Length: 76
Image (cartoon, rainbow, N blue to C red; front, side):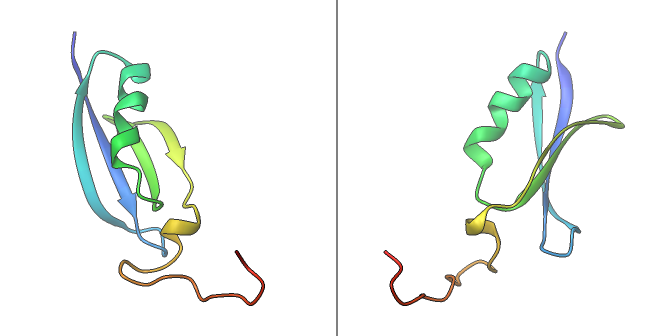
């Protein structure tokens, strides 16, 4: 049976700024289906009213789109 999942992208304030729908057989398939959507922003994967997994923001998602982190002297 196929279940309906929703992947929520969160802005730096923790508000939903985008959602992607996924239809998957189970949680494991849904988690694998998230990978192509990862862009550094914090995300939450939900199936109906059940939170399946959270993805914290990484450095790529810490800056607004189109901006790069400041260059630090001595950084590679």
